[in-house]
Length: 173
Image 1 (cartoon, one colour):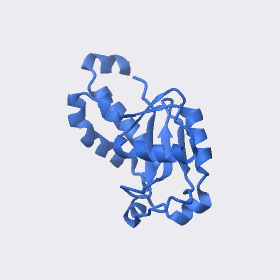
Image 2 (tube, one colour; image 1 turned 90 degrees about the vertical axis):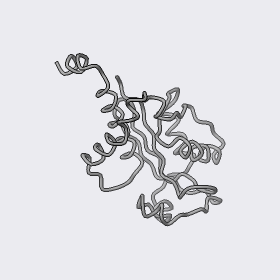
Image 3 (tube, rainbow, N blue to C red; image 1 turned 120 degrees about the horizontal axis):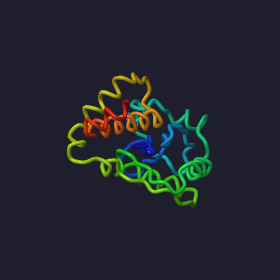
Image 4 (cartoon, rainbow, N blue to C red; image 1 turned 60 degrees about the horizontal axis):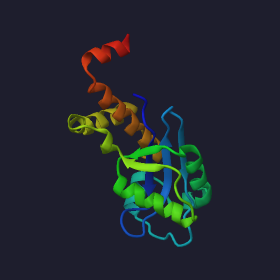
């Protein structure tokens, strides 16, 4: 199975008024993209607990973030026509909409929930495998592209684990 593209969004917080501050994804072939986003003038919501989690301050966004239009164009160019998966569709989809709405563009790709890729047995193993991959990678920063890579690797491990033993053996030969 070829790994599907996985996207992750870091945000200014949760709830009303929150907005995307970083978008990262890993493509099927393994290429990664990650970009900080300069807040639009009316994007004012800020949650200090979210900042503590991802380690991205508003000042860093202003100094190192890219304009929202540039970010939306890059994402559209690289993900055009694909179904891209995320683990928190209920949060990531509104944040992506906020980005694209701000620059009067539409996504050229479809965002879908990773859970749609997992059967019941795989769902039961998802969190232990995800924790194991995170532990093995020993990531020091909570960032969008790193999170996307962890999700992609965990998905592939869960899917491989669920293959019949004879298929796993043939794949290793």
